[in-house]
Image 1 (cartoon, protein in one colour):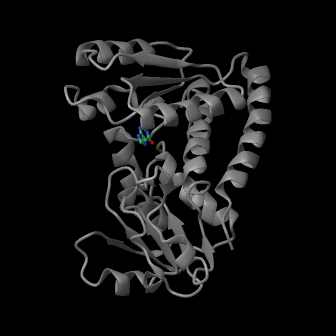
Image 2: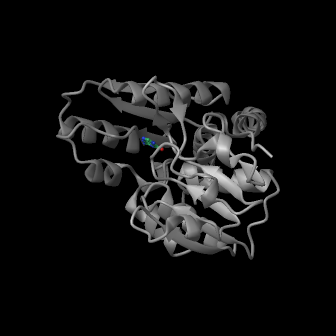
Length: 283
Ligand code: GUN
């Protein structure tokens, strides 16, 4: 089974569009997401375009704030502060990576935790690990949603996550654990990685290396979630999984593109609605 993230994402966005119209009616305004981009990184520009497009599709307010590559850290922090203090702004996202002269840690911490739609702020990260109410990071949240929508059972299963980043590996492992999977976090230095992965009922690959996960990594019937975004020499977008080789072995698999990627953006929309509701209901 191919898990069609694009289609699942589309139906979730269609439902949110209707929900947002009802929210506008009820609260007298629409959820508002502000996206900040610094510089001209082509990949970042393309991601941000997708985010703004989804914002418009779902009927949110908000827009893109474009700052030049050489903007000072102080100016960026002042811009964030302005949005933090704007009562009509519900969500703030600063597209990463940032130019070297700006501290990403400082910028992430500067975004008000209640408007941190990425779920990257240290307060949200801490709250996730303490099982407290928090904003979940979009990609991990999207992965759980994909598994649920595809009818993949999580409770009692063995999950292996390859990758230990703060944005994907660690939080997706925590969310799988919360759903009662038994979770192994593997990485590039794991001994006999293929054998470890072959134990998995659910295999999440988030390493950033094209075709790293071959058929020998996959237990027959396993659900394989490909979080990789890699460019081949001829510019094609591919994941971390050798898709053609793994497809006949896996019970379910997410394609790249059209799997996890669209879900990340859809969960960003979901988080914006949640931030809006938390703020309107003063939680
Ligand atoms: N750069 C790559 N992925 C992301 C993301 O999810 N959020 C932000 N802010 N920047 C990113």
